[in-house]
Amino acid sequence: MKKYNFGAGPSILPQQAMKATAEACIDFNGIGLSLMEMSHRSKEFQAVMDEAQALMKELLGVPEGYSVIFLGGGASLEFCMVPYNFLEKKAAYVNTGVWATKAQKEAKLFGEVVEVASSADKNFTYVPKGYTIPTDADYLHITTNNTIYGTEIFTDIDSPIPVIADMSSDILSRPVDVSKYTMIYGGAQKNLAMAGVTFVIVKDDMLGKVSRTIPTMLDYRTHQKKGSMFNTPPVIPIYSAMQTLRWIKQEGGVKEMDRRASERADLLYAEIDRNKFFRGTAVAEDRSRMNICFVMNDEYKDLEAEFLSFALENGMWGLKGHRDVGGFRASCYNAMSVEGVKALIACMQEFEKKH
Ligand code: PLP
Image (spheres, rainbow, N blue to C red):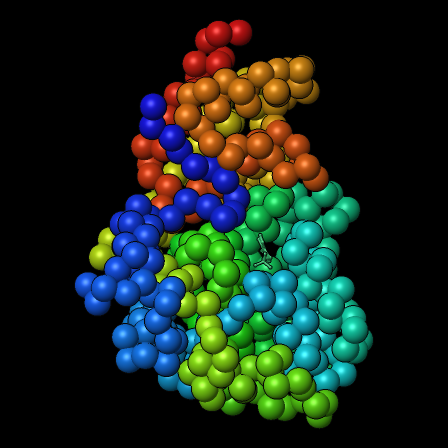
């Protein structure tokens, strides 16, 4: 039976990218060595790093004056590196969920943090709007896709101060005007690569402005100056990123990813809204296209576990919602096919018929 992976992350990746990565782990480029056992300083790996960085720039239209850096440590390490490198006195944070809260917590170790808006009052089911951005803050931090609660910010915010965005779970799913951001970062293990690498897109001339001393490894300038090769980078995850980026390019780039994301999300939300057993948890206008969260309607709550097993028996993998939301979460990242979504819909309809 065909399996569809709706897991939130590490998550579905293009088959082609996974196969090529597996192959490189055995015999890289026909050299007769695994990429695992080759020096990151070899010209062969340098070519991988160069291509991965170049493709990130090309696909996202990264302007001149920005660097693409690959790091270890996950998006969670960025939660502290961001304030380390950019917070002099005060930073503004928009709180749209668990990850945004965690980012804010780290910033508080470095200076004053103003929470300019929060959707905690309604269990993060919406994206706050119409808030005032303090012009005296060093930066505004946002989380564009709320992986756990399934809301998403679709527009590039106009801000009087530098914007720094955690795009861990929606990077490369739509075109972004990178020039509106001072920095974009994220863990790669959704739309980009296997787990183990973090991407950072940073405006070079915004670095080095804080007065504090930054430990070498936590200073973005270290990695920017050394082309992400200051120390040993996570070579296999970077190779898998390069392969995923090649696939995105071959499929038509982020515009095509954007079209597919809308197609999948429109189909699935339409079924959630139609089927009397289910209801979406996020407000309609802020519904994420990457993480589609839904629960059983109150009168059918007892059937939740049954639906999960039924879906699993039918090949739907990773549908269980995060414990803070309950219910179900169908993560539909770039590599999810429209067939996968249609299979899930068929499963929901079959379940409806059964009861
Ligand atoms: N930010 C967002 C939006 C996430 O979804 C996640 C993980 O799912 C993280 C940050 C944390 O990423 P990592 O596990 O790479 O530290």
